[in-house]
Image 1 (cartoon, rainbow, N blue to C red):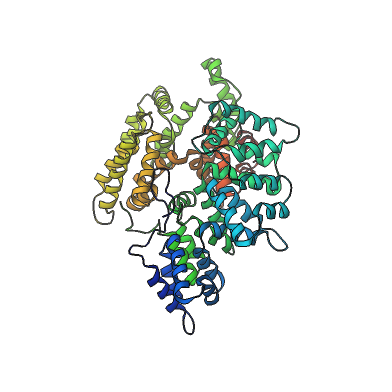
Image 2: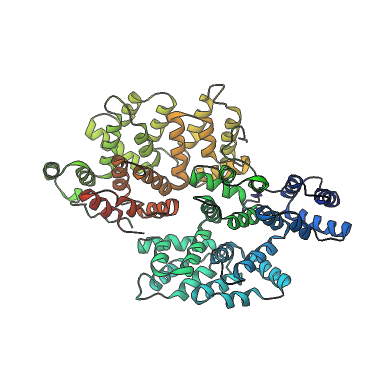
Length: 615
């Protein structure tokens, strides 16, 4: 069996086949290939349902029975992408990596993307096994071939990664975190020219856990994420390699989800990339990749493979994927500096503020006026006004109520309550109660109390909470009955538990069910209740990504949703806009700055000033 995750839970999609018999499987494959043509369906069904360890045993049994090489026979019988996929599955992981690297560096050109993917994502043990497999298969040293086929700092970093000498994750030096972050800043942003050797040493040797803390510290002292500095200071394949290393340090599953998405989006499919990842991750972290894929791209990996491929090739890929996260009935269990902050409200008398606001209103108009006047309010005053506007008039804008109440912390919620009562002479709770109803009202009122726990995760409780969620999702059926019990249980967990605890609950839920809680909610709930719970889950998982997605949707297509655009740009400008910018470019392959440029006039200038820079 392949390695398990941190908690000892197997996260691959392919498992050992029960009652496995290597000799019987060898005979079945022989029979599927004898005579005219071959039974491709039988071949794919058998091979994709055996683990790699079992496939290796089948190869040995095949040779003992028939004196022939099974991989050679499969190559003869099969063709094209299907053949490449099946043969890839028959090789031990290290030999599959070795073949991919060999193909990438042989011939006239080098496939740098393949080199980057493999070298940036493998563990120390996988690197050591890769070097040994390459030596055994090709009677050459991989390091020598890489030295002969690459150059410059790109070559140096590849060689460092190839050694497999990264410190293990339990090696974290608190004293070194600040120093490493400072050294990276001094090597790039704060230096005339770039000290690439410092980037190579720190990113190539420190443990993943240590580097995650370094990246947090770097953001704190520079005001920019490390990726921004890499893009600004490095170039070419070296830049791409370092960005891949950073992505894998942050989340290997997210890195591969992104690679898979890019392999299938647009015209044509990058089949070599698709095959390589599906084969290499099927017994490691495919379930994690599926979860991230569904969260980031709002469609399942399974459905995208199904739409983008065909024939036996498609069937084999879908078997490796292991399940459709969209399918019904499968649920089991430095702040940005704002150029237009024209007055520090705390230092100005109320009368003067009112005079200033009146003058601004008379001098400005349209969307520009809304931006400038919003910037003149305190965050709590602005949020209170947005909530009031969402509830006044004939209809209620539930999306604004959800966005604000689902994403603010306890202190922000308390400040909003005070601001709302001071300006509108009515409590926010009363306003929500009179303007909404049912479970949706209960969710909003619970969030508006600002009483969420702020403690650390409780693993035992997280497991129990995940069981509650899984049990309710399994028993409740929207199409045939009342979901009030389900929604009540969700409310008590999602609206009162701490953020770190809920992240652990979501992880436990995936381990129990092989499904993501967000998509379970989407499937089992409807309307405003579903939208509220989904917003809470997405905000807890990755708040900057939640806002990046809302910003993108506010500007894509014909026309701009200026109200949403202004609200998010103003409210996040001194909180996490730099992180939102990073998520924006990662999710949509264009920068927030670039999309805002599609607006016009002084309104555009104001928004770009708030945005703070081009990524």
